[in-house]
Amino acid sequence: MTGVPASAAGGSGAKPVRGGKLGAAAVNQASLWNIANILTMVRLLLVPGFVLLLFHNGGYDPAWRSFAWAAFAIAMITDLFDGHLARTYNLVTDFGKIADPIADKAIMGAALVSLSVLGDLPWWITGVILARELGITLMRFWVIRHAVIPASRGGKLKTLAQGTAAGMYVLMLTGPLATLRFWVMMVAVVLTVVTGLDYVRQAVVLRRRSLAAERAAVGRTAEALQEVAGSPGAGVVSGPGAAGAAGAAGAVADGAGGSGPAAGVAGGANGSGPVIAGGPAGPGSVVAGDAVPVEPVVGARDGAEAER
Image (cartoon, rainbow, N blue to C red; front, side, top):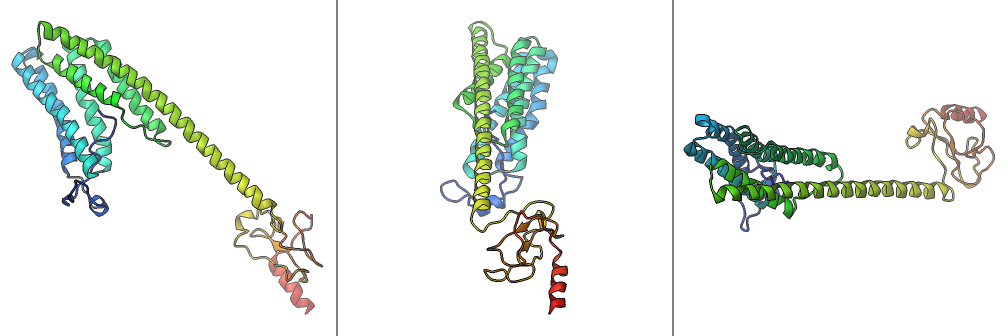
C-alpha cells in the first residue's frame, strides 16, 4: 500500500542490462508474465488463504493463527519486492497498475475485517482505516487528469505501522505484547488520518495549479489570435463559412490595385461567409465588413468569361 502501483510491470524475458535497467526496446516488448506481476498475483491468492487459515478451528487456535500470520507476512513482503522490481527494471503494464493497489488493500482489508469479526479489533479502527484507503483511492482518480500524487514518506510509515499492528493482532499475544500491539495500532491509526489529510491537501493544491495553468494557456492563445487578427492586411474568418475558409475556392485580387472584377477572397465553402480583404482595395474589390453579398466563385468566373 505504498500509493505507487508497484507491479505496474511487464517483463518480456529480455535480460536486464548491466546496472539493473532495461532499455526502451526491452520495456516495449514486456509481457504480462514477469516477476513483479507474478508476486502481485501471489499476494492476491494469499488473501483467501489467509482468511481460511485465520478462521480455521473457530479462529482461536494459536497454531492456525500462526499459519495465518505467516501468510499475512509473506503477502506484505511481496508488496515490498514487487514494487522494488517494478521501479528498478521499469516493468510497467496496465495489469500491474490495477492489480497492485487492489492486492495491497485486499490483504489489509481482509485482516482488519476478520480481526473485527473475531472480536480482537474494535470496529471503529477498521472503519477509519478502510474509509481512508477507499477515499484516497477515489481522490487519486479525481485528480489523475491534472497530476499524480506521489507516495510520501508518511504514507510508507503508515503502511509499515498498519502491517506491523495487524500482524501482531493476528498472533494471539498476551501480557505486555498485547498492550504493545494496541499502541502500535494507535500509531497506525494516527498516521492513517494524518497522511490522509495531507493527501487531500496535495490533491486540492495540484488541481488548482493545473486549472490555473489551463486558464493561462487559454488566455495566451486568445491574445495570440487577437494579435493576428489585428495585424495589417489580416482579415477575420468567421461565420457559417469559417470551417471551410482554409480550403475553399475564392476569387483572389490581382496586384495592388485589385483589377479583377471579383477582387478579394470569398470565405466559406458556400460563399456565404465574410470576406477576407487581402490588400488595398481596387475597382470591383470587396472589403471585409461591407454589406455586399459575395457571389459564388463559379458565377464570378462565368461573368469574367462573358465579358471577354
